[in-house]
Length: 310
Ligand SMILES: Nc1ncnc2c1ncn2[C@@H]1O[C@H](COP(=O)(O)OP(=O)(O)O)[C@@H](O)[C@H]1O
Ligand SMILES: [Mg+2]
Image (tube, rainbow, N blue to C red; front, side, top):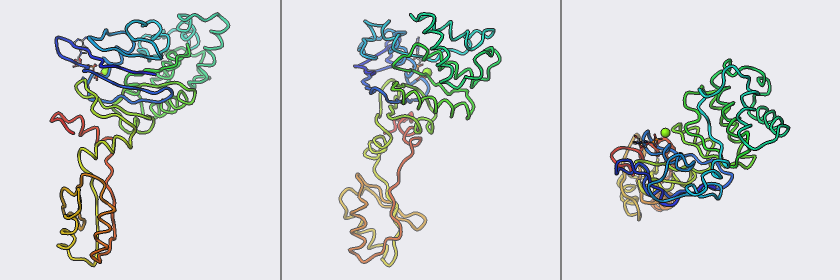
């Protein structure tokens, strides 16, 4: 549903988005992550035809982002700036105005406005003035405005920034509903638990380059392959030197450390089966053996570290 081919944007010869190749499947929620200044907003603006790429191109909903900008825009819903709503008009009046910008006849428009406000949870606030809305309600209204013309793709830039935890949770529920309705959601964020909770796929961009991309399990796997797999092992009825020697002889083991009664094994691949076999062969008893799984936050911090990370 969204695809880029070597998409590049340079400002003053500096590439802020650099040969980006990315694919977002239809009906998924894709989380586009990266530190401030990584190039997320610039990428999104290029996808919407608001910034002209220096080179490369892309497609949104089957339309070329350079040659078919109007079709792309009609296929997309974006969150507007809440400051742009008319405070003196009600939610219904506001949404009717935005909806009238699309080719809908009056009856259709009326139905869509009502249905959309119901969908985003503003059923009881339809005739309330937007100026009286809380931040969370304004955000819901923003989603209503984004979807009133029933677009296939939703592109939200930092949608939960500045929203309280309840508002952010409501937003996540709404995004899942959008997905159930077959929409494709592309959002930028740097709130890791949120991304982990709702995104099917995640891409992390640093200095305009995609560093790592996949579902959470794939990210963990890619990261572990580069950083090494970690194992935590506790044994009894076996001599420490014997343990060390047998672990050392396992192919793929990089280092062995001792911490708080545990052996910490760093390896190029998942060696847990070889580890348990070798301890049992030496007549030792394993009381604990667990692979260490890095969190998305840990992966993000490492990948985005200014020193280069992995
Ligand atoms: N119009 C512009 N002119 C010059 N530099 C820009 C412009 N827009 C963005 N940049 C630079 O491009 C980089 C990426 O910005 P942006 O896409 O907004 O990052 P993000 O959304 O990931 O925080 C930043 O270094 C920013 O200063
Ligand atoms: Mg941004």
